[in-house]
Image 1 (cartoon, one colour):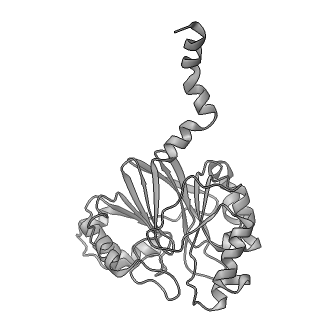
Image 2 (cartoon, helix red, strand yellow):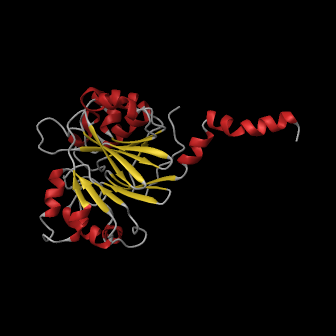
Image 3 (tube, helix red, strand yellow):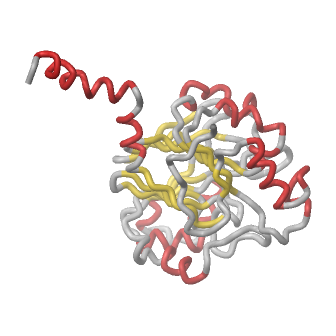
Length: 287
């Protein structure tokens, strides 16, 4: 090998990293599967995390996991065994139901559950005082503008409080998952603007690779700044009401069809989650 070729070979790893080849390869180890509404299975390098996925029949006009698949999910049967962590952004019944979570924790003895104190209270009411599952349950509610880091072996999670909306009693959490290969943000049902909920975490959010955001973040002006300020390689729209829902479910657009049109017009690279089992395409990006 000539001296020139040897020098190029020696510098090749640094050159590849400089153009993002290394990060692209790492991102391919991340798999995100949509279940229903805001429910996802997030997998990376053997770590498996469920977010807002255990909520039974949910609410009218929003998708729920199909019944046969839901039974396998709640029972920890294939392909739902080996889950490390279950997260719920808040206690509303289209995101969390204590009965399915209780059954799931019984079937998955290593899985841990993290949510708001409101959700944890509902879950613990259903467990005997000496039930071992209590040791695997944790309620968190960081002060607004702060976050709490959970180091859970192969996954670290930054937990932040993002308000659900003016006048609601529900406490809503955002989760920033730090996995092997990528950082994934799930914000639950927040109605917080950039200044209200995100600006104080701007440096951390600049590292986000995948952002899972409610559909209204992409179609209503109040939340446009959040989308613009998240340099995510992949944007995902969730919490999409079913086609037959009343117009009030679709904000200023008035219908599901028009809201999805607005999504395509304003954020053509964003991926709407409309079918259970849908996979997030990690190669997608806005032009």
